[in-house]
View 1 (tube, rainbow, N blue to C red):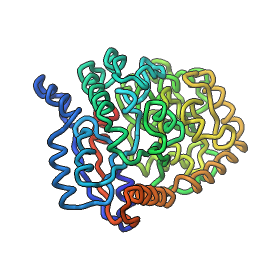
View 2: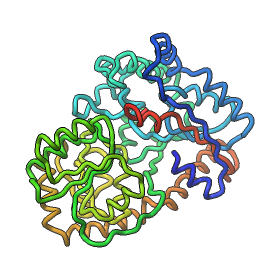
View 3: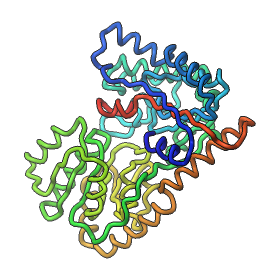
View 4: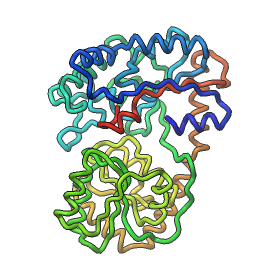
Length: 400
């Protein structure tokens, strides 16, 4: 959301932000949690605040990135009242799954897909590991499905991959309302030089990212191939303990790093490892690796098979299979010329699909298309970018 806001402003568009933060929600009282559950379904505050904002600013388009839990779908109705078309980026699978990742107990789970009420998610407490919190999200999804919100109040959805688009269609969204626009790299880091001296993982240290698969693979690989891990998250203590107990001397955890340091790490890496056990939507790290000319080794499922071409921009391994991952890493380490060629192809992929210029053109064309569908002037003069608590939530317990 922040990158797209900067991109639009640099291109001369007027962007107004509407945000609400979920910091401190975990300490809410019982009464506060009941109030939060109701607000997740329908926030009067959001609708009123947006009514005033829309009346004053008169934007051409409202672009949402997340509404769970505090903004709520009432925001779409405020836009409808003001006659402002709505675009919604689908950063995760929340509309299909209360837990957002289509994952449960370390496995892909689609039990709630297409159900009127996501009762399996409630039963297992898939949102914030809480049945009451999951019940609130499930109630929101069910209520607004019954109200027709998802089909009638949102003019255009943005899925990040064709795979994700297919899942949302399977879950009941109208195919003609879903466009595909990938994540992009805001600042080009430039193509790396040399073959690199270590494998690299970049991302959140959480269950769905496959960190256990990654460490198990390094048990088989031994000390000859260095691995650097950059990131932070709820598994950081488990990760640190595992590295010590399993005597994985080749593995180094670097903690959370700023973006410029991540790009520097990619410039010196041999490959980027993406071991996710969930259906990733579109990891930005892959686009960044491609920008650096860095081949990627990723789990062969979901959107990864779409983003990555095996033996062209990287290698695919069997999901959740440390033996398969270890085999691919070892092959990559012993075939530097082939990996260098893949890095060149990856850079070409970045230049054709994932640049800031390509992203801006896609956004502008999408906004114009939505306005034309509403019989409005085609020129986009202003955008309301309504981002909820997605980034703040990630600093606590996960997306949304």
